Length: 180
Image (cartoon, rainbow, N blue to C red; front, side):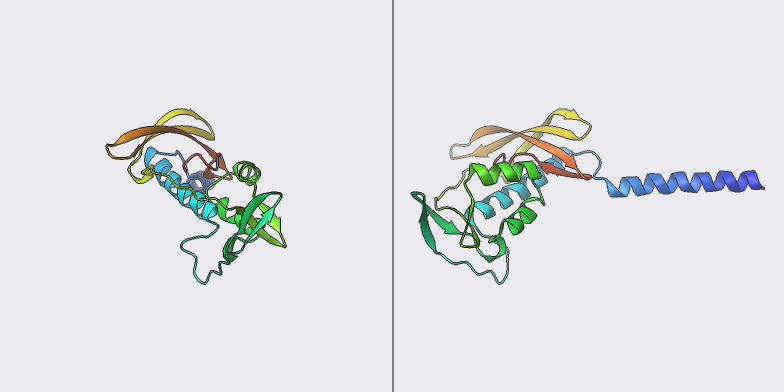
């Protein structure tokens, strides 16, 4: 009787462990999941470059600009006006390494206690919602996908390589402007 009980307990523990482990990880990153994450990263990228989360409610967005070291800057809107808020928002889809590099590359600064970015208009014709993803490299916690993204009329295609890294059981993109 003790042997049967012990075997049952071992089976329950193993089954519980396997179920718990699979529930906590995101598992393998499929092409569909990679595209979904890329679309979310694209939204995060453009929200940041516009200084405003488009879906944010009750956001206060000053249109104040100022000159700092010869460059015109504008303040981020209230939901992103500190570095901590920006990092928290971007870390939903980007690695901390990618965020740190982006802050330096795009010259985001804190000025008078608020986060600001160079005042520049930009955009993209790439239609990421119509992109096709192809896995071209993988290791345990790294995936490299090549996206074929249509744009223009007549339609042309641009190929973009995007690296996904699994951080704390969550897939994230390792370059801020990979999906702009």
